[in-house]
Amino acid sequence: MKILNLFELSSEYSSNVYLVTGTWNAIEDVNTLVDVGREPAVLERLLAASTGVGKKRVEQVILTHSHFDHASLLPVIHDMFHPRVYAASQFMQYVDTILVGGEHLRMGDRDFEVISTPGHSTDSLCLYCEEEGVLFAGDTPVVIRSAGGSYDEEFIHILEGLSRRDIRTIYFGHGEPLRENCNGVLKTSLDMAKGIR
Image (cartoon, rainbow, N blue to C red; front, side):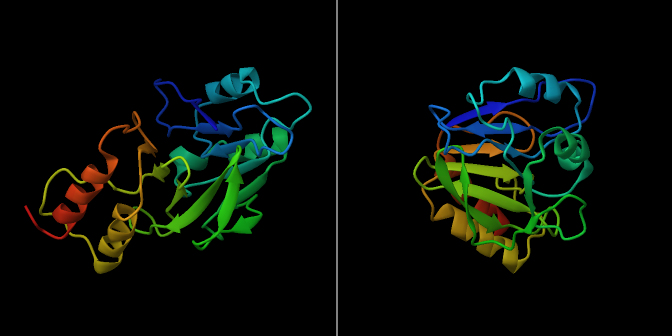
């Protein structure tokens, strides 16, 4: 599996846009965008990316949630590539499949589990690949830096579930990925959410 962030910092407020492809760009690999952002320069980087000969450049889009900074380019991406679109929101145009959590989707050459993580938004979700230990977190607040916030039992239950998984890299909706001590960070976040200092 190859993961390429197509977003580079600019004056445009946008999310990261991840292109997930197979290691060898085989025909059966599923070229996937995780979020589409709102930065038009993403399109140039997408058109320049290696996605395999004889394959659709974007076969599917999975939105971590429907906020404008993650989903604004969806109409353009849809018109250019005609991908299948997955999201947890039933109110968005272009969505082909509504995700509720528990589904398994092929991204690149790996299988990912869809994890419903409402909190940041009602339609937030994470994508987890057990084989690679990869978590796409979107804007789900999996890194909590100080105690004292207000977290409901449902979110604490979500953090408990994530903490039990073997997570080696977390790709966030904004900023650089976390590549070290992911499970330790998740455990600390869980303690903070529970009010344990």
